[in-house]
Length: 434
Ligand code: UGA
Image 1 (cartoon, protein in one colour):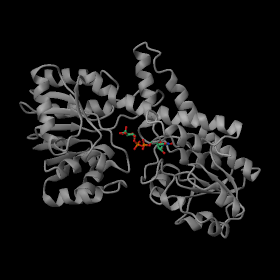
Image 2 (cartoon, protein in one colour; image 1 turned 180 degrees about the vertical axis):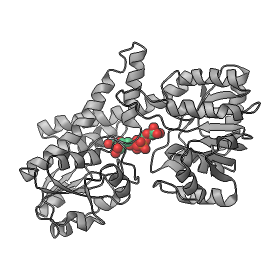
Image 3 (cartoon, rainbow, N blue to C red; image 1 turned 90 degrees about the vertical axis):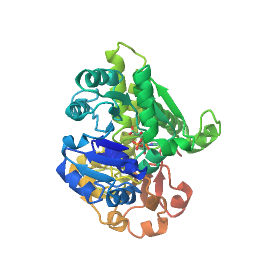
Image 4 (cartoon, rainbow, N blue to C red; image 1 turned 120 degrees about the horizontal axis):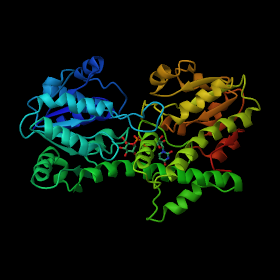
């Protein structure tokens, strides 16, 4: 099938490449000429394991191309909209200008029977509004098909997601839209992937409520970490113990520096803003989810201060600035936030991250960036592990001791074994652990 994908950021570039991998003929469209040039050469403009291979295969096969010309969407039957919905400056609401521009830009190029498919995360009510626009101004229809991919696992999550959700119009038009999406996803559907066909509002809500639930789960365990810190309990053992209850589950119960990235923080804020617009208090608790999450960052800054006495003039080695491992994304990164706060308080912060140095340098040029772990550790008064890259989990206390000036370490992700580090002479602090 011929497919267009409008927006070639994280979501769109992965989606376009994966649709070509499924055998479709795909054109990816983006206003950013540099991004288009990189993708056309088979180079992803961000770090994502597995994407370079899929992208290169698609481009080499001739089934995948990229352009900045919206007119090239003409002739495709399904048009995915995968542009960003960032937080609006000065408010918590989602900024819909890119989604609106993408749909409006597509209108003149839509043919009879085409389907516009929204993938972006939007406030409930957006799809119905855009569906009316598409129907009134073109011969096409619209469906909403939210995306659940995780950075670091984006290719696998796109090719074999946990479920497909289609939000469609009721009646025969919706059946037609469902048929087209089934054709697009024929390969994963044959392996028994669950598929939920529903209305627009439910489809939009599935996405934001999934992210709100995940954020709540993380903040729940981080709230337990605060209680553990006040009582001498160990939150990691607590998580293991409650996680054995299948109704609770152990995944996403890792206490630490909390959630960041381009999705969870802005999505819970936009969801609350939408509930406010609807005159509902139902999501008031998400303000606490957000607050617990942000308090963990301050906690790490405080722990570093406690260990060195005064932060001003202290040499701080920050290991990890990406918002999570296997990513070069520093959007709303808890690690970068901590590094910047310490810098603002007069610490001499040296950062090392295996992949996110360049993205971090662009937004935080005031920090020092080391070329490798050893350089970051050399002469440090305190070491902060803020993103749980495999390389940091495997750090050897004896070698670290040989490089630092002071044997002090904060494990912001609860991935190091406290007793091993203490045995090597380190003052060790975790989050929610004695
Ligand atoms: C998240 C969702 O997991 C995806 O399902 C969703 O599609 C995506 O947002 C999106 O809306 O596009 P992602 O932002 O890639 O995916 O990251 P996650 O793996 O969810 O991690 C989010 C943050 O939570 C990270 O900073 C991570 O370090 C933190 N986290 C995660 C914890 O602090 N503890 C945990 O137990 C798990």
